Amino acid sequence: MSDERTAIVTGGGSGIGLAISERLAADGAAVAVFDRDTSSADATAAKIVASGGTAVGVTVDVTDRSQIDAGVADVRRRLGRPTILVNNAGLQGFDPFLSISADQWNRILAVNLTGTFDCCQAVVPDMIEAGWGRIVNISSSSAQGGQARMTHYVASKAGVIGFTKALALELGPQGITVNTIPPGFIDTPMLRASERQGFLGEGVDHHASRVPVRRVGRPEDIAATCAFLVRDEAGYITGQVIGVNGGRNT
Ligand code: NAP
Image (cartoon, rainbow, N blue to C red; front, top):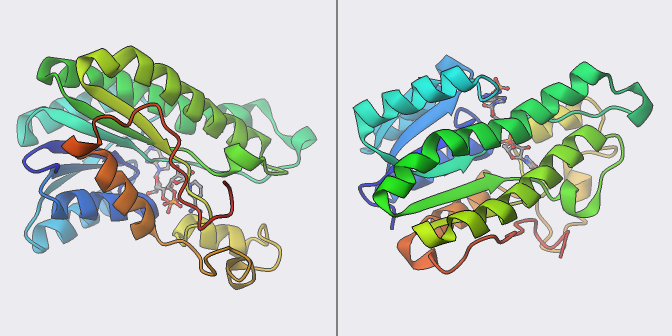
C-alpha cells in the first residue's frame, strides 16, 4: 500500500499520468501532480481533493532541472518527503528518419530520457534517507518492437528501459525498486492526436480489433499496474519491464 506516502507523478495533468495520480491517491498516497501545464496539473489535483484525497498541482517542465528541484522542494514542504516517483511525462513525434532535425531529436530525448534522469536524481536522496522508495518509469511498447518514423521517440524510450535496469541494480541495496511499464496503445489525448493527424493509418477502432484482448488500453490499465509496483509487497520486483499492452508485445 502507498498509504500515507508521498508520490510525484510527472505529466499528471493528462491521460495515463492523470489516471496514475488518481489511483495512487485513492490508495492513500498524497500526490504531487507535476505538469508543465499549470491548469491541467491543478485540475487533476482538484479532482483528487474533491473525491477525498490529498494532492497538489505543481508546475514543472521536466526538461528544466531548476524547475524540478524547486518542485521537489515544494513537495517536501507541502506533502512531506517524496518516496514514490512515477516518470510519465512524455512527448512523441512521427517523422521520417532523414527529416529529423537536431532540435527535434534533442527535444524528445530531453523530455523522455533526460527528464526521467533529472527527476530521479532530484528525488532519490529522499528515498535513500527513508530507506525505501519506488520508481516507475513509463516507457513504450514501441521500444520493444520498433516503430517506423519514430526513431527519436523509440530511442528515448529504449533509453528509459536501459536506464531503469541499471538504476535498479544500483539502488536495490537501499530498499528502492525501479521498474518500467511500456504501455501499448492506450486511449489518451496523445493517442487520439496521433489518430487525428493520420499517423495510425486506419484509426483506433481498427487497431483495437487486432489487439489480442480485442480492445484499446485504458489509462486505468497502466494505473493499476503502477499501483501494484509501488506497494510494499512488490519489493522483490525491480529492474523489470512490465508490459501492459493487451498482448500486442510479448
Ligand atoms: P498525454 O495525454 O499527452 O499526457 C502526457 C502529459 O505529459 C501531458 O499532460 C503533457 O503536457 C505532459 N508533458 C509533456 N511534456 C512535458 C514536460 N516537458 N514536462 C512536464 N510535463 C510534460 O500522453 P499519454 O498518452 O498519457 O502518455 C503518458 C506517457 O505514456 C508518455 O510518456 C508516453 O510516451 C507514454 N506512452 C503512451 C502510450 C499510449 O498509447 N498512449 C503508449 C506508449 C507510451 P502537455 O499536454 O502540455 O504536452
